[in-house]
Length: 131
Image 1 (cartoon, rainbow, N blue to C red):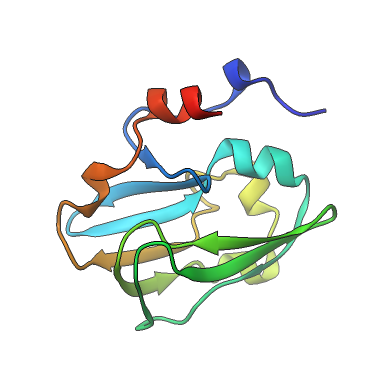
Image 2 (cartoon, rainbow, N blue to C red):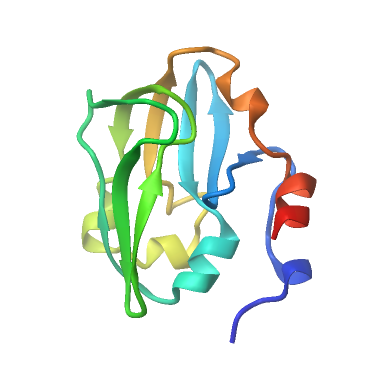
């Protein structure tokens, strides 16, 4: 059974997109993952398809897919930038997305084209309200 909006873990120190992606600043890079809402709706994740280090994307571009027992969902880039790291642990353990979506289950690290690009994304309160 899915969580209610009130039960969702939506940390206030990170930003969110309408496509259920979260972004956390880490130095001059951004760590990107799927929100607690997304992993909850997906159910058990069985496969994650991610880009390669060095790939560049525009904001809103498709950068990968998450496959669960229920469905396959596209992942959309929250900001324009270059992928600097990919979470290789998801290859062997895609359920990290379910177990720890904000820590061990991160997807990619991005060097954004604009340093303040993430500032325009949704706050936790705005994201919760949008749900």
